[in-house]
Image (tube, rainbow, N blue to C red; front, side):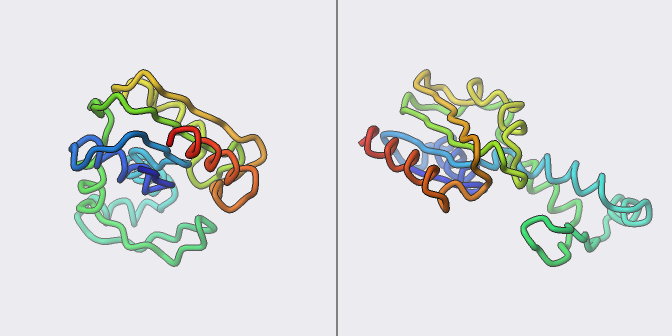
Length: 159
């Protein structure tokens, strides 16, 4: 199974819930537990009035600036609760499959330090675990030659 960005979180949820068997997992700039980090970021960029409205249970429109060129984003505590109910921290993802994680040093969407801070080696049961940081690559690992080659070579190695 291969998952990129939020697909990395989804692939991990599939593994956690043992929805299917697979022989290996490749995650590319995985947005593991992105919801909790996203909530912290959103609450840090909104103003006091929006923060109060959010706390009061209202939906607030959040201008995410240049983040992925998104339009203003409707955000609510219900969305935060949904994010957090799907959090993987504190769980164990079963399986002894090879796991390879690729991340770009230049990734500003999901900074590689976020991923390293999650101590993913403790989240996954497997001992066959590697994180590969690609120096000159951003979040679009699969859109650049070096990233695509690294993932393709690993896929060929694992198959």
